[in-house]
Image (cartoon, rainbow, N blue to C red):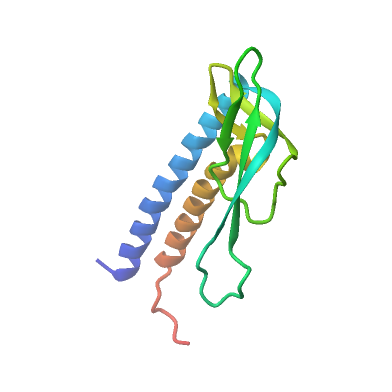
Amino acid sequence: MELAKLFSRFFWFFGGILLILGLIFAAERAVFLGSSQTARGTVVDVRTEQNAVPFLDDGTGYHYYPTVEFFPQGSSPVRFESPAGLTGVVYLVGEEVPVRFRPGRPEGAVIDSFLGIFGRSLVLGGSGLLFILFGFVATKGFDRKKY
């Protein structure tokens, strides 16, 4: 089998899996939106992590994980940490944020923002589309032109 065909099939297969996973997560999040409630929460802590990013200046590569506390109706307070580290958005302790949660499962709450809800779906689906695109590029061959 030609190398270009092998690469293209690998990228199509892997991209297809990522795209399907992204669509599954997007569908799950759409169901979540339909069955969830909103509340106001307060940021009670922000965990900061710095990734070891080579070739970048000190003070870069920070990810912020806010811990939010909210009070569902008729329930005790619930705390959760945002699972996705934010790089550009820094929440301050004491800041109010919108929260979205399922009534029967408030511990699965998320910050009510587009990226907070659909971020994982976008990353998986977007990566899948890129891999599929690379697969189409690979079908043209890597060694057909002399540069």
